[in-house]
Image 1 (tube, chains in turn brown, orange):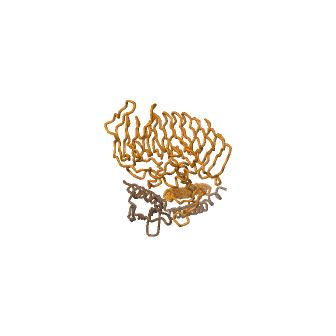
Image 2 (cartoon, rainbow over the protein chains, first blue to last red):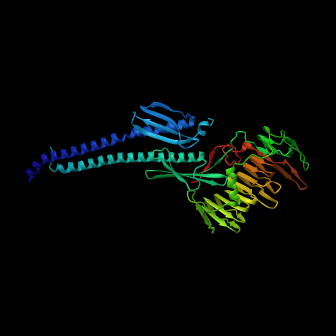
Image 3 (cartoon, each protein chain N blue to C red):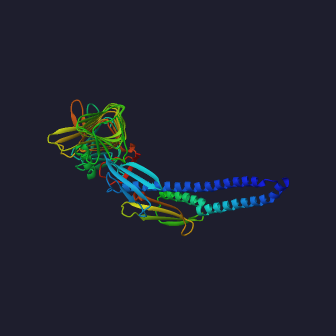
Length: 119
Length: 416
């Protein structure tokens, strides 16, 4: 009886290792996939950068088109006239990692007199 | 050396590892979900503010019914906008949606003073100079008749100050500044020519009524006199109309509603924020406190007989907001009179094309045809005794001007 049990140990060990390896590989694959497609930290960073640029723009009332780089991210601020509405403009701020990959986007319709107010 | 039954141990360990791994993956997934939700919420908040900004600039926005608009033409930023005239103010309402999220904002909006040098006193030039007696104090730019300002002497009281006017003196014209035509027609509607076909009309007044500004206006219409008792509560998009009289008792909780009747009386000690429009008489009792942004409007319509219409603020009351007493008819037919009693404090603006008897304090500006002073023995034109007008003590954020000053619309307060 004892001998039979001892004989099964090697098979058990191999099967166990295979199971563990499989579980580990599956986990790594899924986790890598989630992390790669998500780019969570990058998006969070971009969102916080967008909020910073928008609040600075509103505080300093520098409503002009500009492009600059910060922490390896490209910030694009564009001011457009709103179609079909008088007295307002669209403040648009984009944060990109490269030319196509927009990480965060902010659009807001603001009043023209915001630009004219005294600081 | 591996012991027997290690497959069981390893399977259990693998299971634990699998659970931990799954938890990590789930954690990442939910973190991503949470961040996306936050991004959507931010977008919805931006869109709702964009909608409010559009309503602040676009006068021709859909009235009362509301409409859906796509903000940036991409089809992903749709908002619902609603614009509503609300007394001398406007209601700007916006609902933004995205991925099942909905944010709604309603603001009370109005016009501030367009000019930086707003007059503390604008007295129409009828050829009578302004005379000051007693402890009268005027600070700010004053538009006065060509005959100017002088020291007066009435009932043994001379002018006690060092300087007649603490500010610039400019010459006024022979009529008061214009009211915007849109506002005038709105005030005319409230003063008695209103039709109720678009609104929800009810004829029973409950003790508590609360109505959102996204709903239809709840119009409570009575042909007889109406008393708003202590303990009752009326909040929001409610218009209370009586064909005869409305009496507002102290202890009645009123917020943001409009009350219209030929005669309106606010009982002593009332405290609240309300827009009241009367066509014959408006009386505010002793020690009342009308909080910002309150409006007391006395708008006289067409009459066939000569009459006197009066707006009276009794002793010790304070009003933060706008007082307007206006008649389209010439003063020979309708005499409009506003009385601001002793110990009253008005913080805001007073606008009338009639006379003002000012005995209290105005932190803000007065625009009027003439000032009257009644004593026991006589009545004097363009006399001020122991009165104060100080524009510098009014908040620079005050909104509630009815003169056509060309100012931009601004937010008075957020409602819902």
